[in-house]
Image (tube, rainbow, N blue to C red; front, side, top):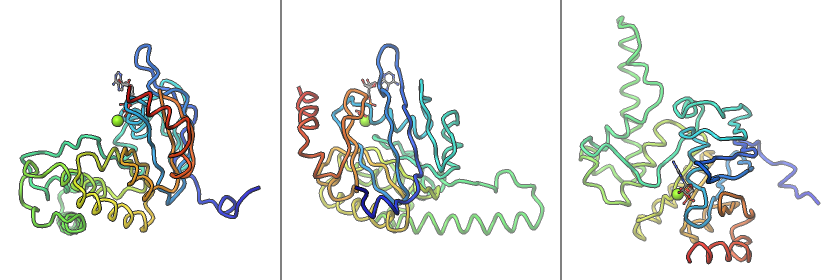
Length: 263
Ligand SMILES: Nc1ncnc2c1ncn2[C@@H]1O[C@H](COP(=O)(O)OP(=O)(O)O)[C@@H](O)[C@H]1O
Ligand SMILES: [Mg+2]
C-alpha cells in the first residue's frame, strides 16, 4: 500500500544508479543506487572504510565512476568535473576541512563564491559599476553567513586560529556562499564539542527549512536520528539497507556491520 507521502513525493534532485568505483582490485563503491528527494535530509552511515566518502567524491565529481550514472536535476552529470557540478547547485564539505589558514574568515568565505563575473568582464564604466555592486552584495552575504554561523567576531582573523568545531562552521559558511541546492556534508560533527554540535544541528535544520536538500555522512547517531528523514547504510562498498533512523538503528544487519567493522 502506498502512503499519501509517497503519492505526493517531491521530485528527485539526485539519482545515483548502479554506481561502481574501483581502486585497483578494491570496489570502494560496489553497485550502489539511491535517490534524494527535494527538501530531504538523507543520512549515509556505515563503518569506516564502507565507501561513504568515495560515494561523495563520485556525486561531487572529484572522482569518476568506473560504472553507473549520476543524475542531478534529471541531468546526467557522470562525466562532469567538480566545478561544473558546483554550478549545478551541488555543494560539499570535507571530512577534514582545509580552509586557507592565513586568509581571514571573510576571505575564505568570499573565495567560495560562484559566478565571479568581476574577473572576466570587459572593463567599461557600466560593467565596473555593476561589478562593484556585486562585490558589495557578496561581501554582505559573506558577513551574514559568518554571523549566521556564530563566527562574526572572528571575521577578520586568519582561519588558522579556529578550533576544530569552528572549522566545521566555516565549512558550512563556505558551502552556503555558493548558493547550493544540494549539500553533501562529510562528518560535520567529527571533533566538535557538545555546544557547537547543537549549533551545527540547528543551522542545518534552518538551512533545510529554506528548501536546501542534504546528504549527510555522520557517525554521531544522535545527530543522525535528530536530523535525518531517512538513512542509507553502507558496508564494504554496498548498500546494506535503508529506512527511518530508528528502523536502521535496530536492524541486526547494521549492528553486525558495525561490530564487524570495529574488530
Ligand atoms: N583514492 C583512493 N585510492 C585507493 N583506495 C581508496 C581511495 N579512496 C578510498 N579508498 C578505499 O576505499 C575504501 C572506502 O573508503 P572511504 O570511501 O573513505 O570509506 P568511508 O568514508 O566510509 O570511511 C577504503 O578501503 C579506502 O581505503
Ligand atoms: Mg569517510
